[in-house]
Structure formats: C-alpha cells, structure tokens
Length: 351
Image 1 (tube, helix red, strand yellow):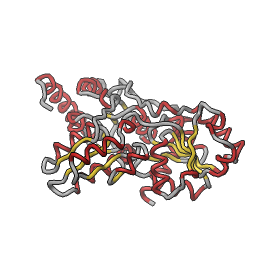
Image 2 (cartoon, helix red, strand yellow):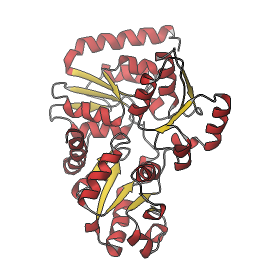
Image 3 (cartoon, helix red, strand yellow):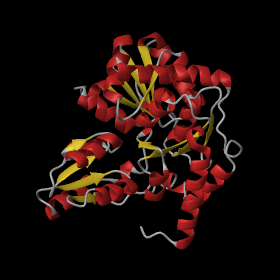
Image 4 (cartoon, helix red, strand yellow):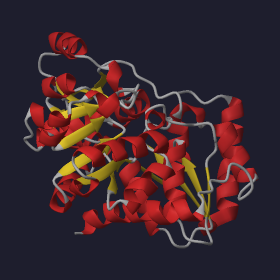
C-alpha cells in the first residue's frame, strides 16, 4: 500500500504520542489488521498470543487493542486494576460472537441438564464470544479456547467430564473433533431455535461433542471448488486453511491451523514455494510482502469488515484521548467468572 501524505502525517503523530507515553502504553494488534496498523503495534499475534501478552503485561497503564470487541474485552478481563483497555473502534464487533448469547446458552444448558445432566458436560467457549459467555463457562467449570489451543483444551475438557458443549463456532469444533478421531455420530449440531437443538434425546445421550450452530462469515466463504480451481492453476502448491473453514475445505487442504500456525507455515516454507491460504486477506497480503521469495496467494478474497474498522485516524484519536475514550469495562461479577475460564485456558500453555 502506498501511503498518502495525510497518512504519513497521521503515522508521525501516532509515533510521537507513543514515544511520549513510553512504557505506560502498549498497542496490541491482531494479525488481521491492515499493514499500517500492525507496523505501529508493539506486539502482533492471534487471539491466543494476544491474550497471553495482555495477561503477562503488568507495567503498562494503557492497553490499546487493535482488534475486535471480544478481544479487547478479554484483555480487560486479564488486565491489572491499574490498567485501562481501549479499542480504537468500539463498533468493531464479530457476527459469529453474536450467534450465541447468554440467554440462548443458558436455555440450551437447562435442556441438556434435563436429558443427560449438566454434571456430565464441560462448557467450552471459543475466544470469539462476549464476556458473559466466558463467565458462564467459568462458573460451570468450563474454559475458553482459541484455534491455537483447541486440541489441548479438548483434552482437558474430556479429562473433567464425558461431553463438551462447544460454542459458538461449529466448524472449529467439528474440525477439532475430527482431529481427535471422533466419529460423525459422536458430534451433533445444536440449533438454538429448535427444541433440544433439533436433536432427539437419544442422539444427545450418544453424543460426546455438542456443537453450537454458529460460524465465521470470513472463513465460510471458502469452498472445495476454490481449492480445486487453484490446484489446477498451481499443481505444486500447498493449500493451508484456518479451522474455522467448513469440514470439506479442511479435508481438501494440505494443512489447517490457527492464524499463528499459518504465519509459521509460510515462514518455514522453502524459497520458491507456492502457498495458497484460506483466511483473512489482510494477513495474506502482509505475508506476501514479507516473503517475496515465495508465492503467497489467497484461496479466495475474504475480508473481515470489523477488523477493517480500525484505522490510522481512530488509532490517533484514541492515543490523543488516552484513558478517556472507547474504554472497555466489564462488570466485576462477570469479570471474576470470565477470568476463571481464561485462566484455565492460559494454564494449559504452561502445563
């Protein structure tokens, strides 16, 4: 991207504010942010890496999170009492996170309790969810997971109880279940608009993995047809996709993994390699620039419009009003239970 004169002026203002705030400020940027935002961040990563970074930082007074709302919420839950978390665009949400809310999940939990008993189920919520759902998992002996640590989180959950209720992304759940060797009949989808999620009591009793009927708009845009078309054009290419993609896409790919997995996949590829990636376009474009000696291509152009709401103008505005605007606040009673679920997730990384 060629910087416009106004952009250069804005970037210079941001750099000066960063310098003035020094160690009192940390800017966290998700991999899906546009290049100019990532370049201004102090740390870039996927939702798991950024959660670890937010939890580890004890010194900064201000955490500015360049991502979507649920990520900034998680940083606030993990923050120290003296820290303030802000997001440059408060309206940067996540449609998938909105597919499960606390009312619907509580209703599903009560229905499952009637059929098999809640004591047999570990609730597991994907990071892409609001604080109340993380709190629900915290108070019901469950945990949070990300695409990076979903397999390890599954292991932990099954060591506690015999079933998992996984929400809100059915595709990450199913692809992780497949990775763990589950049979199709062991995994059922829960449609919150239907009685018993659209399942029979017998199917619920036989299931070990109950998948909420949610999905990511970015990653469900990819299809098997896209893979077949790209393989025809680039026969020697490797296709790597995110596990939020549908099961059929993951099965057709050469590899599937989290955002950080994809970054490392490209980094470790041999010069001259052709890598076709099924994930958000901003990351793919940045990887193509960073590794010009390999051909990095998008499987299909898929933009996250909410990540794209963070820009130079609202980042500058946030830094000019540090500690005052777009402050993320989670009620203490929600934060306490949500922290339990996040801490269980983070503890798995050091186990």
